Length: 485
Ligand SMILES: NC(=O)C1=CN([C@@H]2O[C@H](COP(=O)(O)OP(=O)(O)OC[C@H]3O[C@@H](n4cnc5c(N)ncnc54)[C@H](OP(=O)(O)O)[C@@H]3O)[C@@H](O)[C@H]2O)[C@@H](O)CC1
Ligand SMILES: Nc1ncnc2c1ncn2[C@@H]1O[C@H](COP(=O)(O)OP(=O)(O)O)[C@@H](O)[C@H]1O
Image 1 (cartoon, rainbow, N blue to C red):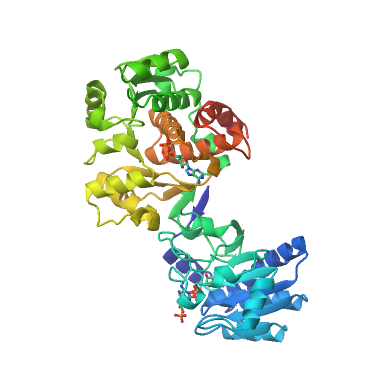
Image 2 (spheres, protein in one colour):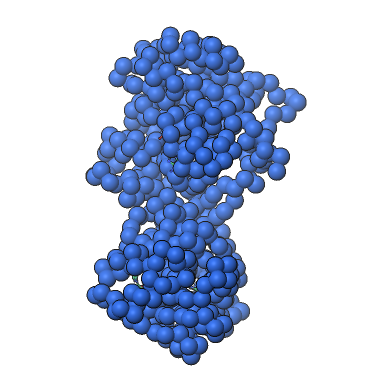
């Protein structure tokens, strides 16, 4: 498990770190950054370094790291971009032979433009965990001024990103980020993770706070969470999943749902739907059984058009929502809920579906861009309103439990972008439904399903395009591979 901690808790943990002289933590942080920078320069045979220096301690880390690189004989230009600069760090950089330039507002001088264009490595120390989201107006041009061949190494976080990982903003996009002691939310959350690049954690001796704000499952977590059957199990004890999905027009979604659940090893699937998808399932997924019966969880809504749905599907979906069984709602099924249930509930919208649901529930005054700007905050509003866990799909999938649960957000980024293909969300719904039926909580079922779904997409065709049905067929083999690690 990778864990990230709220910024206030990080500050507290840093303040509580005793036994060191003043500035020792910064020296350790800078030494870690310098070591990574030197390694990357050696890998690419480069020696020209530009250090971007903001007004806080993040700029101090970058200046001391720049001083170490200059002492090692690299050519270092320190560009001061904030209202002030860390005094002793600046002195160290100067003494080591770094050239110091200023770009505090307006357009940069020619020497700064040339240094940025020619740099082999840019050390980004404009903002750290004390930064406000966004780049100051004069720095908006910065990302375009950095040469295409430069390796961008961010100190603690890419400048301009929201340390809490909640808001999307203008930012530097790094190839790699060196952070200290443990991850911060910015490194794992959907709007900010893409700017982080490779994440390297350097231990500077700060103890982990008690409670994480964000978690991420790794491959090593799967064996402890995956429901592995024992000798006393039978198909009922392993979990029966009821699926209400698709219709005469959308016949593919049930095939994806059911194939995924069956391939992932559910005890049994009962499908409820009209003639066409039922006939297809009878011939293509013979393991499936049909019609009502006892189940341990429901997955409702993939390819379900509530306006034109079959009466039996709607009746059963509504009864499921009123029952005390776990329910997963996907796609059209999200139109069926408007109040909290007493049983575990997992909602699996993509961004457009989340916006529509949030607007229908009137959780805020939301413009068209609201979910793109603040995805986890909007998911949280819906989770709190419905006392449900919201799994918001995307390149970084966030599984957001209601605040009252006290549970951390889980985010997963395991799949290749090839996974953004029609039907792959239906596969995820069948897989997560199977895990709910096996008794996992919505948080575990959602995050484990997102992990396995992403890894299976890569396993199905490493490095190339993948169709949703191939992801569904791959699930069992991927689970076996991860279980045997
Ligand atoms: N604590 C520790 O023990 C350790 C901490 N360490 C390091 O310290 C870092 C945190 O340092 P910090 O608290 O000084 O915050 P940080 O982000 O560098 O500067 C904030 C200042 O920047 C400015 N500013 C704000 N927003 C901005 C923007 N969008 N764009 C541009 N400028 C912006 C604003 O100042 P202003 O310009 O308004 O005067 C604000 O006051 C941390 O990330 C880690 O690297 C390590 O050494 C290990 C030990
Ligand atoms: N860029 C991306 N990289 C990795 N996975 C992605 C990306 N974009 C979307 N996905 C994943 O693809 C799936 C798409 O789901 P969804 O939009 O519901 O598709 P559909 O409705 O066609 O089944 C989700 O699991 C999502 O997390």
